[in-house]
Image 1 (cartoon, rainbow, N blue to C red):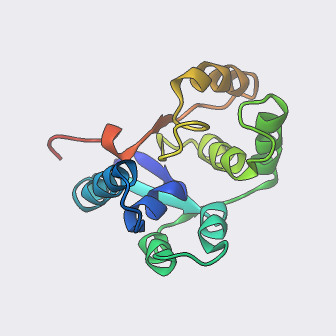
Image 2: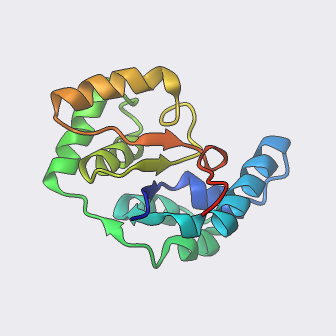
Length: 158
C-alpha cells in the first residue's frame, strides 16, 4: 500500500507561482518535478481547508492550482479535527492567527496521514516545532505525520 500524503495549499500554490525570485523559482521547480515524477508513488489527499485557502482572493494561477487537487479525495473536517486544531493553537504549536495551519496539522494527524507535504517551513515543516507537536499528539493519542517539503519526499525507485 502506498504511503498517504496530505497536500496543503502551499504545494499547489508553489506549482503555479509566477514569481521570479530565486526562492519561488526553486519551490516551483521542485514542486513540478515532485508532482510529475513522485506523485504516482503516493496516495494523495487534500481537504476542504486546502480548497478554501486556494479559493481566497484572486491570484495568477489560482484555477490551475485548484485543478491540480480537484480530483484528490478529501479528509473530513470533523468535530475532532476542529477540536485538535483549537488545541494546537491553545498549546502554541501554531500561531493563533494561522487557523489554516492548525487545521492542516489536525486533519493530517487525526486521519493518520503518513506525510504532510508543505512549503510552510516556518509553521509546519519546522524541525524545532516537531518535538512540541509530538508531545501534544501523544497526550491526544494521535500519531504525528512526517512533515516534509516536496524535495524531501523522494523515492529513488518505485
